[in-house]
Length: 509
View 1 (cartoon, one colour):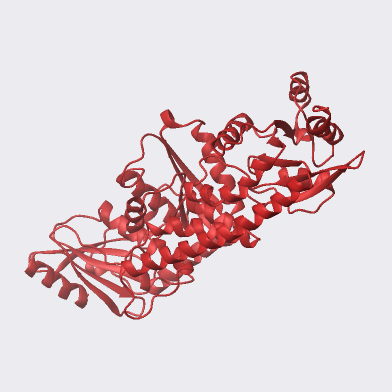
View 2: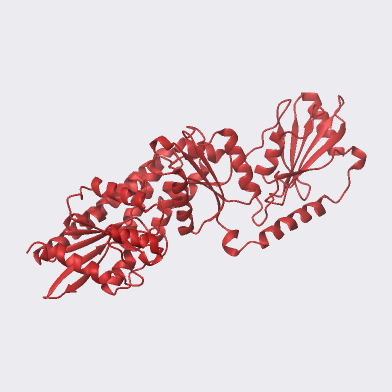
């Protein structure tokens, strides 16, 4: 009470709200002076408690008018994960008349993310604050312990804002694909939000809605806020400033998946080049949101804190990577010329990511290429030989999967890999026929192939995963003359090989 009275007297004397941030030991870490109706909380990242939902700090501040905790106070409580927040309403002499307090609600499904305590008068203040905090954290622990191990880490809130006039597919399909990308990246999706409108140029969803999403994220112990679009540097900075959540956009998520799955020297270089180009325009000394991407640049030593130095280092590394990729491209061209001299026909497998291309390659060639039920499980091009009767053989080549709105930098980086398709005598367009959006995926693949000027190469559409179709759909596709196969059960593979042989040799005879 003595401390409350002292702060109240100072607050009345200067006509401003005064706040204290207090550790659980009673040590005052910050003295905050605001205006007559609010205070502004400083950046507190250094004071986070590593193994707790709460920060280990409580906020005490004055109210010059007899007003309870307002929305701004309650948002400060949740967004900063304070142990508690208390407002002391003081009289004209600075003496506290009564107190309003609030705690974070440990129930993630509760309507409000905070619990308001009844108004208390000075004589009602009790000791034992530490017991209350321990009980509160015990409730948080109980809620967390009920979750599966895979749901405790990398928890994400997905945000999609869609201008339907410019989209070639539905917002629901785009959000479903973002969820699948998260599954591939090992991220547990806790909640989603979708909006059909032009993205706000500053915060994508608007200031009010962003605050609401951040409140929900903090309340549900979510670490990542993932947007289903590529954020501009200013949007990423603005959203990052509003929260200490990790802000990730669609491009960054795809880059992370590519980085994880690239195995060959070529693939690793291409991914690193795309990451650096993505980072180049987002370098900022004060933007902590991008700090996780700066590992590839190198630590900054004394006297190397200027933004220009960071940009120069990125530019130098980009130039070095581009030169290495040119060398690798020349080697690939020599290999292609060698195959051309031997006059061995080439069949390229293309298709949307996770359509079963690698599984089909394994089934056709009895190989063991990595094949998983994930997006972009295979990034590095793989070639195998198939021998036909009459001493004839072909080279069959698997390539990186396509996806809607592939990041431009990544698309450009992998263009060299896809150039091998230019020498193909036949393209097998593999389609996951069990995907409800397979027609949209086919259009996306066609668009990418046309952009690579591969539309002149003969193309055969192969509807894969036919074993997952119901009888009616299977029959309708058969009537339409579709080529149905199953790389798992090997259904239709002999017919596929016959058609490949006819297309490459017999058709020309």
